[in-house]
Image 1: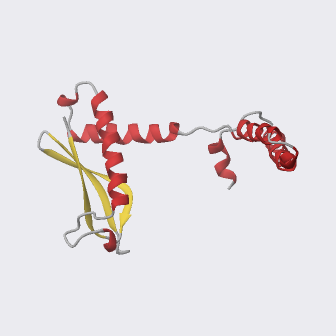
Image 2: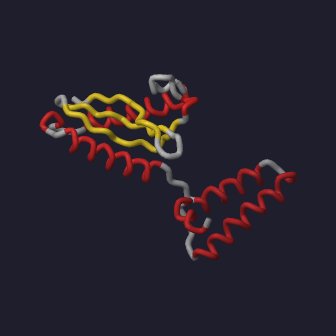
Amino acid sequence: MPTFSAFVESKNKKGQYRVKILVTHKRLKKRIPTEWYLTKEDLTGKLKIKSKYHKDLISEKIEKYQKICDKIENIESMTVHKIAEILDDALQNKEEDLFKLDIITYLMSEYVRLLALGHKKKKSAGAYQTVANSLKNFTKRNAIDVKQMLPFF
């Protein structure tokens, strides 16, 4: 079973330190880059992470990696490079599918909720309904995932 640990690379041109996850399997190692860059203030003199916020983020990611590895059949026969590839693919796919929000349904539910609160919220409720209707008219659809709206911003 692979083991995971976090480490920090040496400073880049911008003076930031890249956090990587080290995967060790059958005495072979593979570094997986993360999206986090730290400053000197986040590190000790020996480049150990002292920022609790970043430690927690890294721990969460390592936990996800471990859960994914628990589900991989025949993991013992795989190379560390193959495991790293599977982990990267699995996390990308999960993060893409993790959050879904139909913005029109959300707006209409807020409209109904505000109407139920009474006459003082009627104007606010109307704004939600107007936005929902405008989105429907503009897109010619009754449901829009909020991620589909990102290209417009």
